[in-house]
Structures are given as C-alpha cells and as structure tokens.
Image 1 (tube, one colour):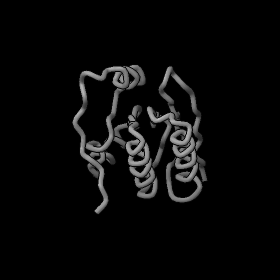
Image 2 (cartoon, helix red, strand yellow):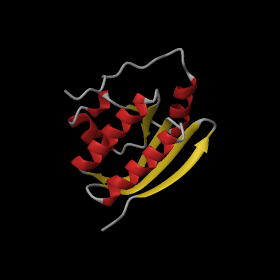
Image 3 (cartoon, rainbow, N blue to C red):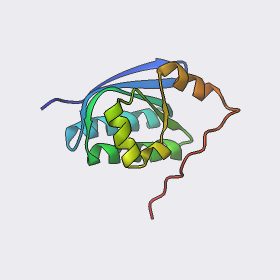
Image 4 (tube, helix red, strand yellow):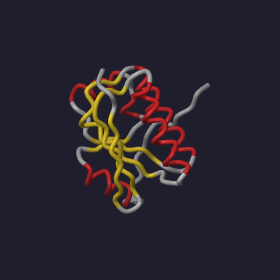
Length: 129
C-alpha cells in the first residue's frame, strides 16, 4: 500500500501542500485532515493543494477534500487546487467538484489569485442539508 506523503511549505501568507501518493479511506485521508486542521488552528487559511503527485482519490478522499474546503471557508479562507492530472480532472468534472474548488494550471497562477482581490471567482456555495 502506498501512503500519502504531504510536504508543507510557505510562500508569503499562502501554505502549499504538495501531496504524493493515494488519497483514500483510512490513514491517508486522515493525514490530510490533520494537516488542514492544524493550518486552520494556526489561522493559515490560504492553502494550495498540489495534486500533481496524487495517483488515486477514492470517495473518502474526495469527501475529505470537500470537508477541508468547508472548514477553511468557515474561517474565511480558501483551498485552491493545482496539478490536476487529466484523470483527476475527469474525476472532479464527473463529481461536479470543479464548481466547488478553484483550480489553476500552476502554482504561480494560484498564488496570484490569492493576491488578486479585484476579480472574485464565482463558485458553488457548500451546504449540507
């Protein structure tokens, strides 16, 4: 079983998490949950998830991504995604999560989007009824 490895780094006020491996049920999704929760507690709520090294995401992993986005948004933050492979992009398209997450071609564009406050991006509001 391949684990999920998370490398954390900073660029100004933005935290970048480089993910590598499989994001699936069990300890892998919990590792991401702990990382995001720790960032929220530290008030680091501008987060970029680099998914270029992710080879697989199951429904539990998708649920953890959505739950993380909700937690971060509740603290006036945002998670942006970069590095979506064609396979991951299709998964996000099929599950309609492209409407929930802002995705960018590269890290520079995602970082710039945090700096650009004059051009808000429309996205679906998250709610659980």
